[in-house]
Each structure stands twice: as structure tokens, then as C-alpha cells.
Length: 123
Length: 138
Image 1 (tube, each protein chain N blue to C red):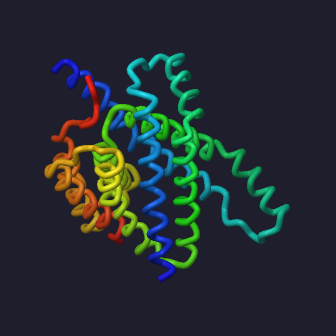
Image 2: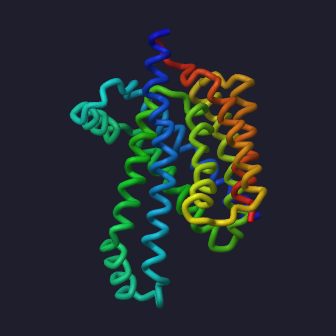
Image 3: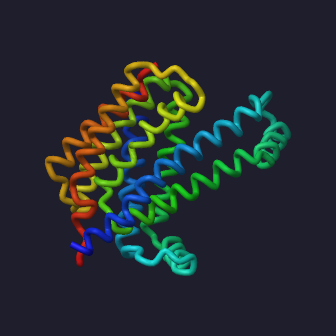
């Protein structure tokens, strides 16, 4: 039970962090100029974004929950199970970021999820 | 048309750099930490010595640098591309790792891992057929 609770925290906070970071970057706007000076300007706006700090906090929560989980659960179970990130991420992108996830994209996502779980579980 | 071609021209290099920097970073951190040996006993002074040793490792700094470059490339690509596009496509790192381990380190890769890599490859090919951005204007 505790294992599944922590796994849920790892997956939800990890994808939540990615989604908050994506939202922050969409607010900052498409980066078109890759000159060092322009990139420093983008970095300044990234550090000023509340969404980005939320993203960093959620990613840190995911990281430390994963460390805690690994202190009692088997790596061979935990790491393949985090492939659920891909499915949760797709739902989050559709519902929160309003991305259009087409059938082709869903199909690709499911193949990637199965593939990542297999790669991580194989020994 | 030009706009979508421009989009792909900057999306594709970053889609290669993101998994590359992240796997390189992890491999270098792993190499650095293995060179450290295990922490003996958990006292403040032992931890302080261990931290100093960690910070003096070139591999640790290279690993951290590589992970920073990963994060910057990841944020750059998310400034225009969909998260539901970038996340599955950058799973190519999982294909890259067993391939590099096999080719460079001569590791024996179990069959199921190659099957998994094939699933990822097909999945990435499918997601790659969809437009990188569905929310972009202009």
C-alpha cells in the first residue's frame, strides 16, 4: 500500500513538474534566437517564472520520493513502473495544456510505455 | 509550410541532444560515484569528507554539466513543442543506452531489452509522424 502511494507521488509529481515547466515555457514564448545574449534573457525570464519554481519543487518532490521508495522497494519493480509517466503525462498534456493528442500519438505513446517498461524490467 | 519546416529544423537537433545529454550525464555521474567507493559510517565528519571528495571528481562535474545542458535543451524545446510530443520522442535514450553498452562496453544485453527497444523505436516513429506543436500560433 505504502509502495503504491509513493509510486503515485513519484509519477504525479514528476509529470506535474514537467507540465508546470511546459506551461512556464509556453508563457515565456517560443525561443527563436539562439545567440548567447538572447538565451541569457530567456534564462532570466525562466528564473522569474512562478510556474518554473513550482515545476522545480514538484521535480524535487518526485526525486526524493523515488529515493525513499527505493529504500524499501525493489528497483526491478519501481523503475519499470515509472513508465506510467508517459500515460499520465499524455493525459495531463491533453487536459491541462490543451494539446491535441491524436490517435497516432496515443498509439505511439502506448508503444513507448510498453517499451520503456520492458527495457527497464529486462535482466 | 516554411514555418513548419523551420520548426522541424530546430526541433530535430534538440530531440537528439536531450536524450544524449541526459544519458551521458547519468553515465558520467555513475562513473564518478563508483570511483568514490561506499560511504563508510554516517557521521558528520565522514559525510563532509565524502562531499569534498565528490566535488573534487572531474566526472561528477562533467555529469552535472551534462545534466544542466539536458535541462536547458529540454526547456528550449518545450518553449514551442508539445509536451505530449517531446516526452515520448526523447525516450530514444532508452534505446541508446543498451546500444552504447553493447557497442562500447561489450555488455551482453538481454533479449527482452532489445524487444523493449524495438517497441520504443516504433512508438517514437509513430509520435514523430504527428506535428510537433498543436497549440502554436502563426
